Length: 407
Image (cartoon, rainbow, N blue to C red; front, side):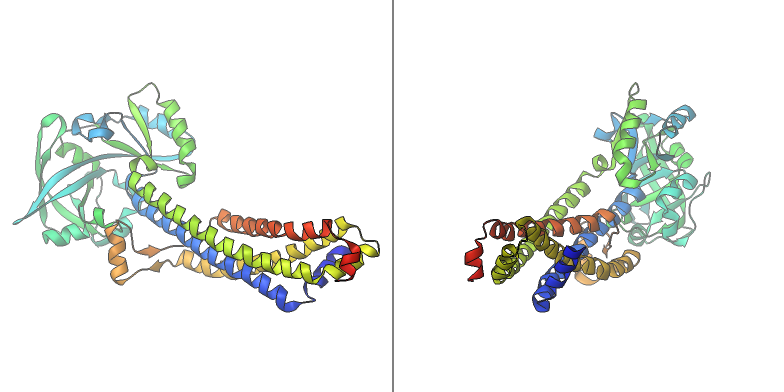
């Protein structure tokens, strides 16, 4: 305790130098936390919009469906298969879907659309699609009606109560042609989906495509989100290994999104490395200056009987106090702002918002409260402070008392 008190008093003998060193760490921590939290928060929003609201974190399909996405490669969905999947740890619900493309028409306008046949009650518990209604009502089981995305409705010039005509190819080459009344309009965050999505009840879609009891995929609602995908997927592969079914993770279903996240994360790590490199050399310069100025003091302490190990321990403790002062103050002051923006994401506007939407992303800057973001920055700063101890450790271990007393 006496050594700790001595180290604490030593760092305040020169308040300006201590505050400069701690201040540089403070601003590094604040900048790093905001940058990484914003990055991971934006990734969470992208994954939420692209994965949870559309594909799901895990899908089960026939092994031949993923290549061509042909209606002839549908799979049969029954109670036994559903029970086998639900028996896996981490699986909350199995959402059967029948998805395909069709040509839609209203008046003189036509457009290719993506039809998604779902079980409205079960699927909505995962996607929360009904929360995005801007007009009308959501589809219900057995109801002969559809919900269309807002940009598609705007392009075709349709409103609630109008009917859309669809033409497509059904199961085993059967022609699929029918018209459906519009029950609701939803606004989706992903522009690509908002331009073409049509949602209808699963039984209606199966009847339209002449595929009773058939689905294109099973989208799974799971516990733990993206962090639990690998373990649950492996368990499902083991359970379904003697079938023709294939288990696909969200990274398989959204390869482009995964590449975008990995690329952006790599650039963020590079910026972080540059920041910490600058901070490291700034702190190292301060430590060298502090050590050089105190050489006579070190000589006196060794001359009166203090061991070099004890002297090194006191110096290490001083650096640790400075590091903790900068990092803890940075963490404490950043957390309220990050928590606020975690609950209130920043909406991008203007040309930047348009550019963001072109990449298929919602123009939002979210923040993350992932604990490892804070832990990693704390550990990195402590590691940098540890590296700066190399110089004073070398100077103390090679200290010549006579030369130091004459300094």
